[in-house]
Length: 209
Image (cartoon, rainbow, N blue to C red; front, side, top):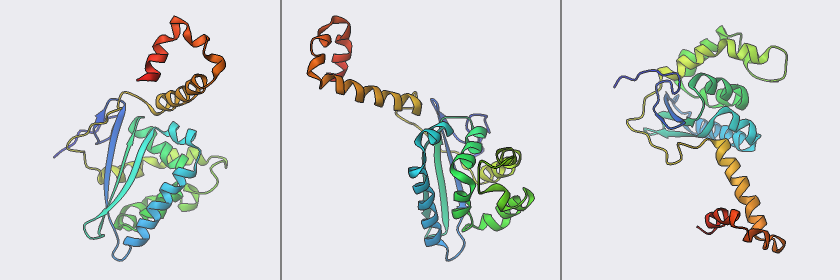
């Protein structure tokens, strides 16, 4: 099945503001456990990172799936921004070292990724202190090669649907904060009289639903 490459999703499908990316790798023989551990470390780094920074990348979710008796790896992720800035921000915000951690256990590392790294100035130039002068510019100037590697292994979903595809993560996060604040108001006896005002009845109706 051929896939049209779009500005929003690369080869992936889009539902509302969300696009899906599913790209496949071949795991080096005997590297299944090391690869799985590295994938978990990347998710741990995301979980421990600044959530506001992560949301800015457009990330909705990410997962790694090892299948075919430990020989194949799927990296699947969904995102809200366009393909190019999403991949750029993922490598800048998460850190390329976390991608290196699991990518080095794939066959694509030797055939495609390592040659791209060498051509881009070496691993040290792509990892380390993100605040050093010229670091971000260097990453962005060399990301086209990595994006091509990802698209080479990308397969479009046969179908894709997300039940909250009309909402962005900033909107969802804001709604959560507003709901938490409103629940505090509802629990405050001093607010009882103010909440009787007719203008607030729609809010009370939502709280009761």
